[in-house]
Image 1 (cartoon, rainbow, N blue to C red):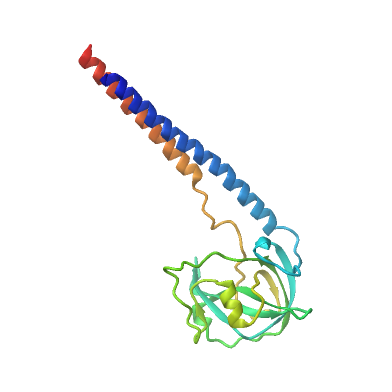
Image 2 (cartoon, rainbow, N blue to C red):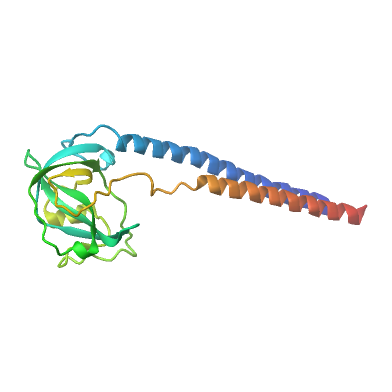
Length: 223
């Protein structure tokens, strides 16, 4: 009876762990497909701004003629090798009279209050609706200082009086100097499913090893 219980417990537990490992393998394949599709869209040849872009156009590569406006929003961030700073968000008036927002890139913290000249230019980049807002932990923006703690596209659009559309620049012609483009990419998107699968399969092997040891102990006592 003890031997039967040990086998049921051991093999059942191992089966669950193996199933979890296989599920993570499936998740890995799914995530790799998502990242590949995202990379393809990010790297596509840029096209004109769609007539009515929405979140279904996320990551679409676009090129936009811009009249940059000197109304600035600063999204607090930091960048490896450059330290603390801001993402600089400004309005862009397009040749057909639309107004959208452009994320020009990384501005060092020391340059926040420096004078910047704005005029006409062109932006090549990607449409983006970043998911950065945590309703529990993201502080409200300091509207007087223009400092934000996440890119909230609808809220920023209301403040800047633009369409709720954000173009993240890969390359800018005619933008202010001292700002480093920080394009959208897949590098920061976690894909840990391989490690999770290895962990579950390793636990299954250990579980089976402990089960074999327990069965050996039981058979020795009853032999």
